[in-house]
Image 1 (tube, rainbow, N blue to C red):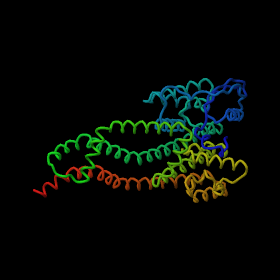
Image 2: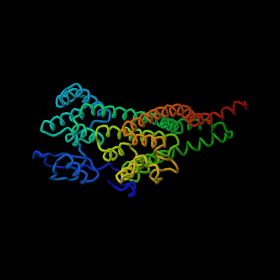
Image 3: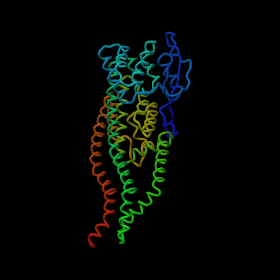
Image 4: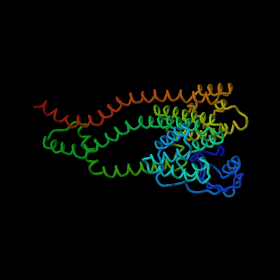
Length: 419
């Protein structure tokens, strides 16, 4: 586990893929792949599973053709949970899913899981070879097999994935509409400056009268756009591509992107609420599945989806290992806790609810209440953003397109007054 004070680069990646081979307590050879921060984490996990590691080496991310997307994983988990709860054996359930899957990646994954389980591998070990199963998924399946409650925990996991997918789709929908309208407005303005305004310029030149200032400004902008517009557009696209590449791949770029996501006036609170909701629900689900608090905190930190939360929760986990209460995280006042001035990542209500959960021994129940409370706030804030976006978009369209039209017709209006 990296030290949170080492900087954001340590939290740019939830881990690396390692290929391992070992021998279990019955003397059978086993192998698999696992996502972890260090090889020592793999070794400790194998010892906990009573597997003596023989070889652990870093490998590439598993790739078995087209991987299922988030919606496919929700459908797969829901179907598997339903079939197992109905009393159908695991192999038969996977066979049913493989035959009924209309997605090639999902069908291939289900068939591979069947083959590995038939050869004596556990479901948890078989899932480790597929990158579509994240640490949260693997942790809950491992706990399910250890406790013999696969049907119960698969149902819990299916509900967890369904809520998480609904939350992500809600956030995506809140952002897609205004961006699409702004992009369309930019295209319309570009077409007007390139083709419509030059046609008006030939008409104005025959009038011989002095043009109004707004019209002269638009004509000058049109001439520049026709002469240099392609250079500006190409440069803008290149800068956007480089910025996107830097934000996605560079550790510091990822961290800056995470901070900026929390800093926007309206979008920031929505991102913060969704991160707290995912963290609380994941931690609650893992604890209810029987995963230890320390391991569950490590997995749930990455499930939050924001590096500021990952860094802060890593420090919280380190404090808990030393005996500090989980609800005492808000007393340190570190820079990681406050990415922008006095803005805290966790509201006082969350701290209070976690403290009550720790005091009553029902931390998993209280964390689920935190998640539900934040889900309701996310839905309310999303509706508020959608209501505010409509008039804002109308204003933007009116200023951009309406301003161009008015500037072009001002000389005609003046000419009509003179005549």
